[in-house]
Length: 203
Image (cartoon, rainbow, N blue to C red; front, top):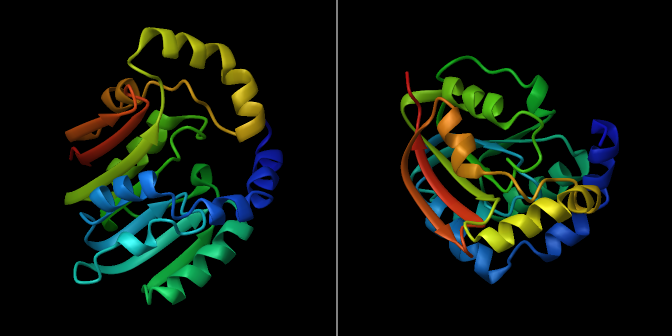
């Protein structure tokens, strides 16, 4: 799917993402993960700001939210005001995004690795942007540990990608192992289709 077409697809989905922003199941996972963010935070694929209610205001100084969808960012800005979050936003594609090394204390990415064309390269960028004593937090969906479900995911992936704009069959554990990041803790749900990941950079 061409990038311009993909961006327009997400632009049109803002209302759907806003309606799903407080999904109770996902909210539990977001809360468990995002509360560990601290300092200067980069949130990549910020979307409509679904993680904003879960940042600890005592630990987080500021959040830089990045997304390639301008309509998503407009929604996230409104939510940042509601939660009095010190946030700034960058409307840009991750593939062209540039930061200096060691720019952030924490990097947060939720439900985004499914859509990046080169996920290992993206994770290696995060490795560079995160400070040595920093933290990287991920909530991702991917290939099930159940062989029957995994086969089904691989079969339906072309249609899923066309409809949802992302992949449903990515092996998140394999992608992490191929990156420079060091996984400190991995927690999986729904037959391994959902992963919560606490990682640190290797310097």
